Image (cartoon, rainbow, N blue to C red):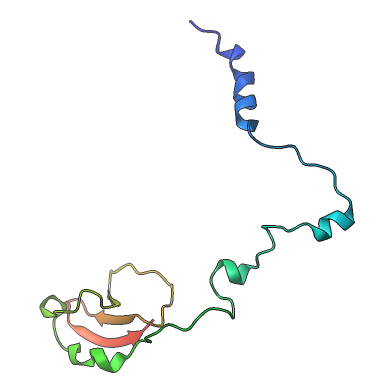
Length: 116
C-alpha cells in the first residue's frame, strides 16, 4: 500500500505550476498597462455598435408559400438559414436577423413564419 498522504502536497504544487506571481505596481503603472480584461459585456456578447449589419436580412415573405404545408414535404436549399420550431421543440433564444423561423403545429403543418 502506498502512503498517499505523502503525495498530497505535490497536488498543490502541480496546481500552481506555471503561474507567475503578481508583481506590485503603483496606481500610475496600472493606468498605463494594457489589460485584456478591459472588454465590456456588450463586446463579449457581440452587441457592440461596431457590429456589421448582415448582408441579407430575413424576408418572411420568401417563406410564406410554406404556410399550410407539412414540413416533411418541404424542400429547402441547403444553405437556407431556417429554423423549424413548434410544440415540444427545443430552441435557443438567440436572435439572428438572417434566420427565418417556420412554426409548425403538432401535425408538422407550418402555421406561420417569423424572423429571428
